[in-house]
Amino acid sequence: MLYLIRSGTGPRYVVWRPHTGAYYWYGEPDHGARVGTTAEQAAEYIGRTLGLSAP
Image (cartoon, rainbow, N blue to C red; front, side):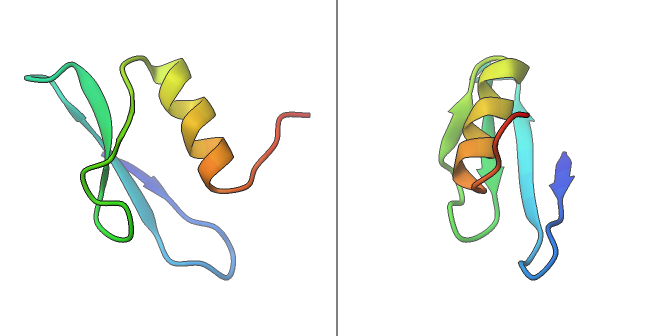
């Protein structure tokens, strides 16, 4: 489980589901939404969702 914390917002979690071969949001507000099948896809999706940008 990946536990994400940003100042001023609640925690967000991402889990790997081996039976589907993908990463998913766990908990609210997007529980069950798939974020990617590779760590790179998941990281990019999470960054976009949380409003983060690469340097």
